[in-house]
Image (cartoon, rainbow over all chains, first blue to last red):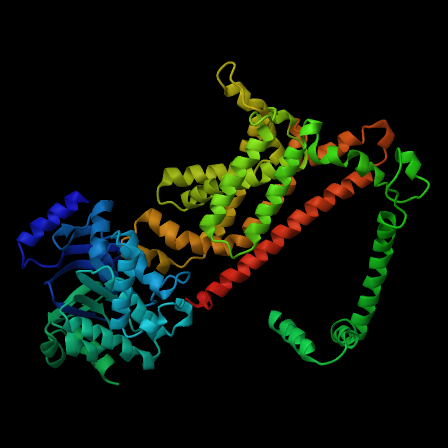
Amino acid sequence: MSMAMQERAAAAQTAGGPMIELRNVNKWYGEFHVLKDINISVRRGERVVVCGPSGSGKSTMIRCINRLEEHQKGQIFVDGIELTSDVKHVEAIRREVGMVFQQFNLFPHKTVLENLTLAPMWVRKMPKKEAEELAMHFLNRVKIPEQAAKYPGQLSGGQQQRVAIARSLCMKPQVMLFDEPTSALDPEMIKEVLDVMVGLAQEGMTMICVTHEMGFARTVADSMIFMDRGQVVEVAPPKEFFANPKSDRTKLFLSQILSH
Amino acid sequence: MTDTTQNQVVDLAEAPRGVTIRVWEWARANLFNSPLNTVLTLAITYLFLRVLWPFIRWATIDSTWNAANDRACQASGGACWAFLREWGRFILFGRYPYEQQWRPALVLALFVVMLLVTARRSTGGRALLMMWSGGLVLVFALMWGGFLGMPYVETDLWNGLPLNLILALGGVGFSFPVAILVALGRRSRMPAIRWLSVAYIELIRGVPLITVLFMSALMVPLFLPGGASIAKLWRAEVALTLFFGAYLAEAIRAGLQVIPRGQYEAADSLGLGYWRKMGLIILPQALAISIPAIVNTAIGAFKDTTLITIVGIFDVLQDVNNATNDPGWRNAYWEGYVFVGAIFFVFCLYLSRYSQSLERSLSRARPGARRT
């Protein structure tokens, strides 16, 4: 860990360097080439929305950033630390990178409050009282402090996803990754989750969101990344991306999802 | 199905009528609601009475409590409980020095109290752990003695029911951590660890318990450096631990397999690391799911302790055999076996009821948990 910290200190000295950088990242599932020469750089405070047809590799790409998936070729740097198979590096990076899943993945045997205090107490060694205050702070932020004592199974999908976001925030991450956070939600619950995400974006959180919510993308994104068949096809600011897509594949995709 | 029965119970309880009427209505609704069911109910009742009634007669009305030997009982044709008055204490405690038998008796009482306290789910986990570790120290101190004027008693003289309980609880208690490690090892990403775990489980499960007991009783001494020896009791305990460990590991693995991948990923993405992920997130959920299988193994383990007779340790069942060697009570083995059977039945019933209440309270604590 000390090595990771030294490297992070070195990275901080070269401030202004990218928060996340992927260089020629490649990944295969057996014969299937999921990610092909991905090059992406995300600045501190930048909000990036990744979109593309299903099977395009966008979820796999962000799951590589906290090593839920392993890449086989190329380099990934998070806050200046390179992701290698070194467990210390991986754990150091996971502490700094929050992730929100499509299926929420709350811990069903723990209350909402326990879900939030668990990682700060066990990973950050925070005293229980302090962790609970922090948890209540973020539960207020996602507007469900009254659910603290309940179990995840007693909450609606939208509430569960907001708890999941608060759980990640309790680790005070430098970056938040969102893997289709609203895809498993009923339509009437999507807004409450997006509202929280917009709030986060406005506070300057570095975010990478895989989502099909184009309204959200237009509001908050600094840049759009369009992926198809394992490749980054187009990177552009949202205005340009929506008004004037360069690639035919992007045009086709946009026409399909914006037509209705 | 549970819902409907509960509803009926509630409905009947609310009905402001006599108990007999309610029982009769329940019987009509459940036992005599079709010609086939009526026939089946009557047939089963007949068979039940046919078998059970002679037994009840034998055990109560026709039984004899005062007799000098089994021939004196024969006239009545019923159970000869006089045998238990004469030999019951030996069956429970075996060759433990007679005037010191209050010590194993106290150990039995201690076990029963600890089991009852455990069943009251109001006691916290940490308090239970402290009670059991303190209780076990006390158990061994009492059995061994050698202090406070209690003479030292070697393990060969620890016989009877306390021995079955020590072996069963010790075997399950020690095998539990082994089983958790092996269950995790079987799902490890490291081939060497996975292979070792699979080899252990398959080897032990492929062999009868008696073989494992023989191995540890006869072969372990051969491998020990010259002169060193371990008491038979501990060799048997190691064998039981290894044996139950393999079965428990499979019970726990079954629980591990149904935990969704998202739980692992969520724990990973919070930076918990392997042991915290397993200890705080995965195992608590997996063990809760495995409870029926774990209790099943524990019940089997308790009954299997009677097999240690084979390596020359006198457990409660062997004590019955020894007691019927008394020329005066050669034919009293029925009474002895019924007595020991009843003891085992009570303990196993308790375990099974305990697991049911544990399952209920765990599912109450996490309503709708299965949805996520």
